Length: 278
Image (cartoon, rainbow, N blue to C red; front, side, top):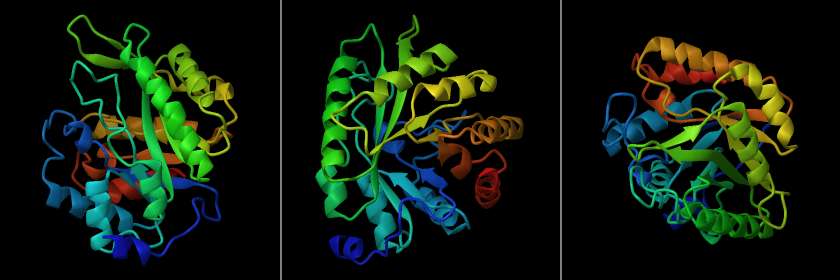
């Protein structure tokens, strides 16, 4: 694996058009295997790798975001040449766990990303004002940003304001006010913002995005998330992304399940449509 990483042909983070189209596949390491109503859709690793290789082969796809186990497989398959490779850093906040918001850094460390010649890192920052575990995540996130900046490696921070329902399920608040606050918090972490990117959701009302993105001058990409199982849900997501991609600081998309497991099963068509939005 080290040999495969050493001989991987690299490319700049941004190509000539200054846009990014990244396919995400770091969900399984957090125990998040579901897509819509299919609770274990991402559990078959050979099937996931086949879908990833197909997505990475499509014109306009710049790279992949994943944990070490998946990136190691893709390295050995030779699927990462001339691609942006982003290592997923904190996966300790397991989906549904009581400690979900104490999101420890159990994935790639900054030194791993540097050693393997990968191009960037990504971390998840969910803040619940009622959960002390969020403070641990905030502090460790700041130190990870410092460590990435010291190595001149970009780090993509995915912030949310989160809360638990009365039943104990963790939900992310996608209101304009909550997304604005999460961006403000994430932008100020660490001793330097020189290598910090934001990975942000589209707000509940897409018309709010222009005002929300005025919160920071940092470059941003849009995340996809689980958009549902129907073709109508897929079309609605594309329209939300289309509008937000016109904003001046938004530079691209990082989308996973909705492209790798589309409602109609056509991975190539879903990826091509998303690329077309850019």
